[in-house]
Image 1 (cartoon, rainbow, N blue to C red):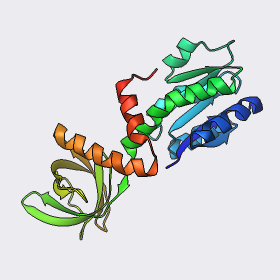
Image 2: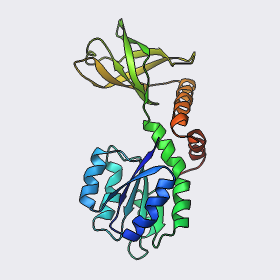
Image 3: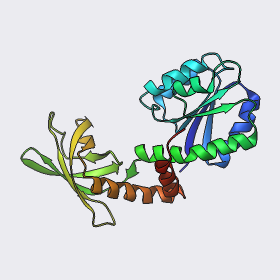
Image 4: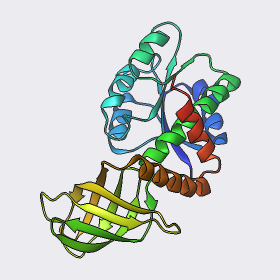
Length: 243
């Protein structure tokens, strides 16, 4: 699994330092040189990290300020790059930055910052990580029980394929057993989306803490195969507050 980042900057010296630093950490870098274009990208694409050159790019501060209102990237780990003349560190944190870098940025400082932030990126990746999985799910719709097949699951919900469209206004109750385990879940859910072909996305509700923890451990094991060290990084992020 490769993490994804967006770097908003026209500063070639900054790019020259940050790109190899991120790539060494298995973080892909998409570079955008215009604030308006970056704002459009952030609406439609999801990134694990967003790095904004706040002071030396016109519109950079506005992108930073608006990031937390974008549905796709409101929880992304955010870095503000400052030049020491305009925006203060305190102001950048107040605008939603999780980490602040001051120019000129050395390779050593960049490496320390992104290594510290990597734990939080991996933790956020798990939050929206969807594990492809095919299993039978028993769905109770009122007084009617039907069988569905899952297509993927996350810590907050599940995608299903049913034989017919999910009726409107129902509050499904789900029962399923995770593959390669004897862990059986019985959870309440709500329909997040559905189509006429029987495909549906459901959000879990009122999941018992023990069941939630078991699901997260199961997902962590799948993430570990794609991103070695993910479990340790998630544990480190949960034990330490974000800057």
